[in-house]
Amino acid sequence: MDYFRIEGGRPLRGTVGVHGAKNSALPLLAATLLARGESVLRRCPDLADVWTALGILSCLGCRVARTGEDVVIDTAPLCGSAIPDGLMGRMRASVLFLGALLARTGEAQAGWPGGCALGDRPIDLHIRAFQALGATVLDRDGRLSCRSASLRGRRLYLPIPSVGATENAMLCACGAAGVTEICNAAREPEIEDLQGFLRAMGASVQGGGTDRVVIRGGLPLHPADYAVMPDRIVASTYLCAVAAAGGEGELTDVRPGDLTPVLAALEAAGCQVRREPTRIILQADRPLRGIGALTTGPWPAFPTDAQPLLAGALAGGTGETVIRETVFDRRFRYAEGLRAMGADLTVEGTTARLVGRPLHGAAVEAMDLRGGAALTIAALGAAGESRITGLSHIDRGYRRLEEDLSSLGAAIKRVRG
Image 1: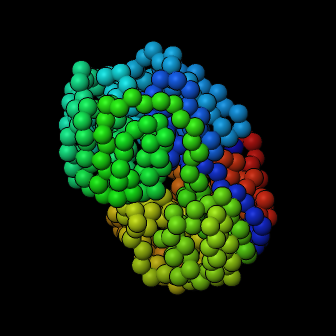
Image 2: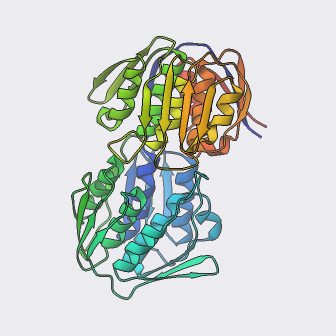
């Protein structure tokens, strides 16, 4: 079993680029199904979840090829609408292929999606959106069967601004005759990126990034050439790593506006931040200080995916931070690992109280993607050696994380088991 071996306590310095966003690339890959022909996605990250998405496309009959950061998907040979359970169960974003398949073929079959075990993550909002647009959805022995002879646009209201449900409704609505209005839509930057790609394909989509997205469906779509946005959570990871270890790091290929809540939290913790159009420079003097209170939520609130990352950085600082998690009720699975490193961290339900103090190295296990990154960040600031197992979780969202951190001067090595 592979693990990271990290010798902590070394300040980080240098420059690192940020790869394309996993959480944007996955819905864009699903969206390629909407048009017959060859689309190109540039800056498409080389990640386990992306390979799962490419596997789904291949199983549906599409031709896929990767050259460096560019992926070519030819959907002309599409010959199926059923996604194998083995691929469906690897990640939650696999559910996005259902909306695209309904729009293109009028049917889709799949098992229930997988992904990190972060608590109750139902897909009922996705199913309701399909049904509202005219699809019949049946659960047959644990497999979903979605069919529609004629999708029709209508006004949809999401009880919560779910990113995945917003994306799936947008994809499905592209194949629905008439106008679909999604109210209380998610406003995350990835929604705007999906809108950008759909427009490049010839779709009529307005309002991405606001709580009201309007799609005029039934238009003829064509393949497109499009660059995936930078990954704001990967960028947050590198920023928190520099903050935890101390030093100065420069991030390139970023959009600082996508990182506003994370940068504000790091500045409150004592970091100095300089923002430029496609760069961020962060300087951190240890120890970080607690920031009082933090609550996660939908954009533009503090992102739930960055919450463990910030906790990993603050754990080795001073002062108190109280974190209230409002999105996933099992987001604090990283707490046991931080406590093994000496963190003063208590969790009650969806609230955690963190009091910063010096950390020491320990052998810990990543229980999910961002929790694994949090343990890595904490280990960089801890005294002594740490070993982090469970790298399969980390690899779902980071392209060779250890290499990027090494380029900043971290003493981190992947040991093959």
